[in-house]
Image (tube, rainbow, N blue to C red; front, side, top):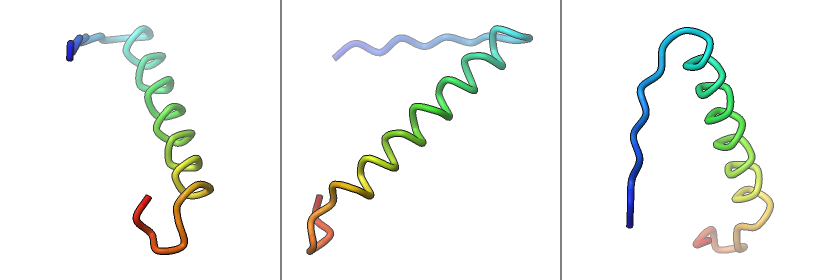
Length: 41
């Protein structure tokens, strides 16, 4: 596994933060729709 860490300030940092928030929201929605009845994923 490879991890890439980026630290950005200013407008680029804001865009990255918005993109990350959008992706986390989409993953959370997907998990909520697709979880099993027992809640185990």
